[in-house]
Image 1: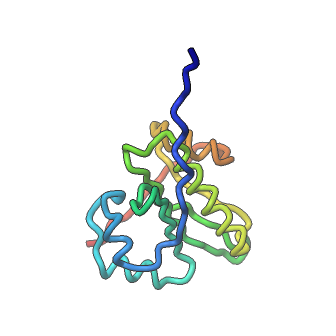
Image 2: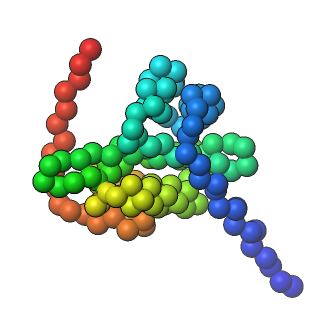
Amino acid sequence: MTSTSPAPPPAPEIRPARSVAELIAAEGLFDAPVRPAHALDFLEREGHHLLLAYAGEEAVGFVSGVETAHPDKGAEMLLYELGVAPAHRHRGIGRTLIEALTRVARDRGCHGMWVGVETGNTAALAAYRSAGAVNEGRFAMLGWEFG
């Protein structure tokens, strides 16, 4: 008697977000409800990128990136946020999204890409490392909130 393993799910289709409607349809992937004015602002800004991963017609993950530039460093990509729907985790979707953003960064002439991640976020660290990121050391993240 032969046992067969179920076939792995097909690789997700990765597409750049082009409309506010797409982002609203995917809002379960974000930390909070999508605000249409903020979504439109993001989509219209040069150097802002949001890629969605689709399983069929359902958005199951996203990655966002923002190009930054400095006079002595040139352009680089900040991987701003990565999210995968809980039912679709541990299938390589996060890595696929990171790799897609890496291609965008290279195509746009960025010399590198970076991400800040909490040291205890083992899932995110595993996804970033599986896509080729290396630990560059410890840093403190400080912030300001306005309004």
